[in-house]
Amino acid sequence: MPDAPRPPFPQVLAQLDAAVLGKSRQTRLALACLLARGHLLIEDLPGVGKTTLAHALAHTLGLEFKRIQFTSDLLPADVLGYSVFDRDSGGFRFHPGPIFSQLILADEINRATPKAQSALLEAMEEGQVTLEGVTRPLPNPFFVIATQNPFTQAGVYPLPESQLDRFLMRLTLGYPDRAAERALLAGGNRAPAAMDALLEPAALSAIQAEVERVRLADPLLDYIQALVEHTRAAGRFLHGLSPRAGLGIARAARAWAWLGGRDYAVPEDVQAVFPAVAGHRLLDAEGLAGDGDAAVNGVLATVAIP
Image (tube, rainbow, N blue to C red; front, top):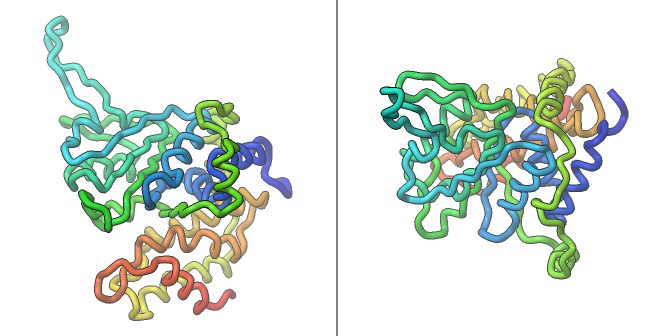
């Protein structure tokens, strides 16, 4: 591999940064999540750019995009699709729902009931949907970006742990810094709809396969395993990280290394992605979601690099 991200990824990163000003680290993490074949959860206040980031990723990467607005009356059939009797053929014809797209924005996912939220479980885990005894594959690549509002807001349902675990990463965007907000007020950001498609889905799938070949040396695997084991033994958390979370850390570190122009990962790659991968999976010893950033940074500070 070259020493820098291969074209057109410098342009991809620049175009995403032009859409979401002052959040280059978050946009890079979101891109790494997609390259690692994961799904992304963005939790923040309304109006800080969550939906803009999803649109920008879809337009920049040339992906078919569908938005599902999660509301309290949303039904699983509204997500997955339904069958309708066709008089001409004398049988039922399936009408696919919006889940049959390459990039799904599940907007305000925690405003829907758990029943509606569960419609995403099989799709996110297995890349397929089973309805009425028939299993239908989803497009490739398939990427879900879900946004959720803080639990302090009215009308939200908490995501169950099984649903949270389907997301490789969770990000928060936060308020922009002063310079970025001034540029935003002056009209400096670029609308996602006006962006050029810099990749095609087939090229993105090839890159995802390349990311999977990024090397993780044995000492680095020891480091990942030590981080996971520490969360289980420290006594600070209700449950430690699962084997699936450990695999997620490895996948995300590979993607971060690839974006850095390397075909091998280093400890700094693991440290860069660990908060986004582990933060939403760790509850304190009383079963409450605490300050995820503080918790994972404490783990990183405690576990020595091999």
